[in-house]
Image 1 (cartoon, one colour):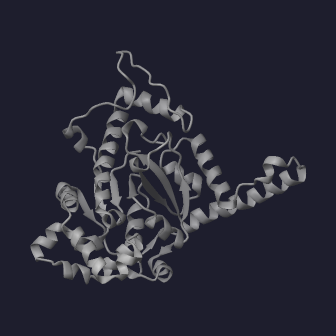
Image 2 (tube, rainbow, N blue to C red):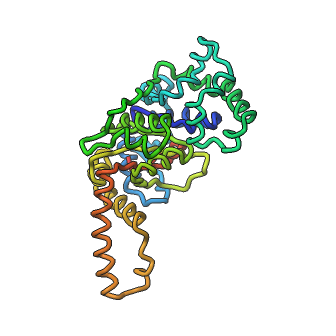
Image 3 (cartoon, rainbow, N blue to C red):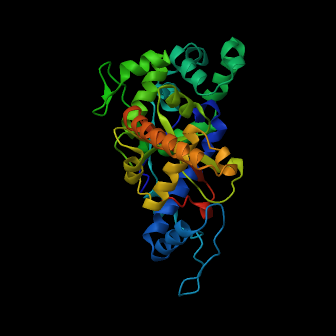
Length: 335
């Protein structure tokens, strides 16, 4: 699987300093794709998939004596060919520096944009900033004058795609996740529009994912009933070196959904089992009780819970959450 399209979550514009992460992520994705395409990269990926979760495999050596670790160096030209397209929610057009310059948009005009304020509110901007007019205008001023925001847009201008606004009758899948239902649940047209257009872009596209730097996207999708399935990653991570990537599936049971992402069968079974146990609560008593009656009851409960879990992922939708380590030598092994 290759990540060709990256939906940048609004959370990065709540804290513009986090935009530095996008550059690191783009490079990491490009490096990983280049490594996969090389002979040594193929052996490296197999080696990593076989490694024990949470442990660092010993570096192996190729026939030529070079290290098999993920430390290859690539030119900017090579990397640029494999960097993903950047996809942005339509409401963020308001803070595009090119638009601001061309139309002479002021801080006051941006601060008075209700849709923008509502977006920031639901994607993690502090309540005291949202509610205090002076604090909010200071936030908007910093956002408008941020060099990191300017750099983000200017360096990716040719790779940026804007999401299309959904129509009232829009839906996702044959089982139908309706836009009008999302509107009823989230009670915000701006937020509902952003979630709907994002999910529509993710639907049926294994090469497209959302990158987020806070819990806003996960909480909003949970609110509309979408089930989260956490994917495993190896190693221990420093908090500043990890971002969350999300894929979305609808109309598929968990196993079918994970198959579209290219996970190995044994890994799929492990992921689904852990997600299921998490959804129903881990049977602590099972660790100390050897009772045959307890074991039978637990098996029956697990069977019923699995049926319900499969049904919810298929009819309510599911997202996978992966912690992608930005340090290249820790590239997620599930791929």
